[in-house]
Length: 242
Image (cartoon, rainbow, N blue to C red; front, side, top):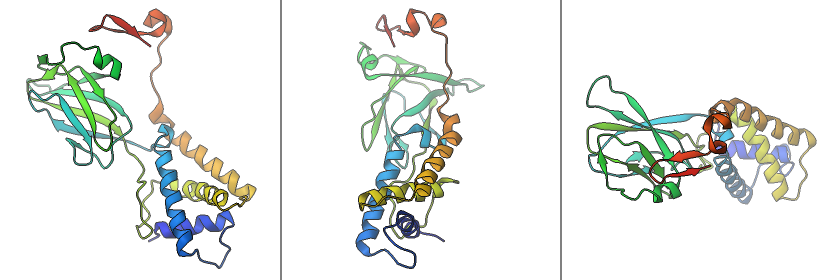
């Protein structure tokens, strides 16, 4: 099976830095790997490049307010997601066990909660602090009964690959990665990629964004229906937020 070394060498040929029939040297391979990982890492910051949302469920620990998210955390994810798409509290006291939507709030709104130690049967609010490598997820009120926490998190692209790793990219990503990496490698080596290479890089990226666009859809509300020019009312601080 193809490795990332093969993908990078193919990108070098598209870039014009390495000619047909030639092989990249060790320095080029190392530079190409760094460029690939940097590019994939940058794509992870763009929600339109995220290809799926994963669902994770863990049991609530009675009286526990802070849960870690990331490698080895309470939510043991391969990488700490830059943001959460949603969070739910699944009550397990009486059937049917409903998944109750929780509201993700900002750092400022979390700070405005004056009595953070209030217990309750369920949690209704959550603050995700985006710390790295482990993020903290704060729950309020603090659940003290049986239940689960459910989060929806972006499935990030692996941006820590090695040359000898077997290539593992989602469907339709390989061509986009190869052509966009070719443009990056050409620029780093003082080359101008062929117009067809540049056009293919743009078109394949746009195709991925169109395909992934359904994950970025959000429900819109008319400002008049929301009141106060679309702001939302924060009950515990008696204030509005945009």
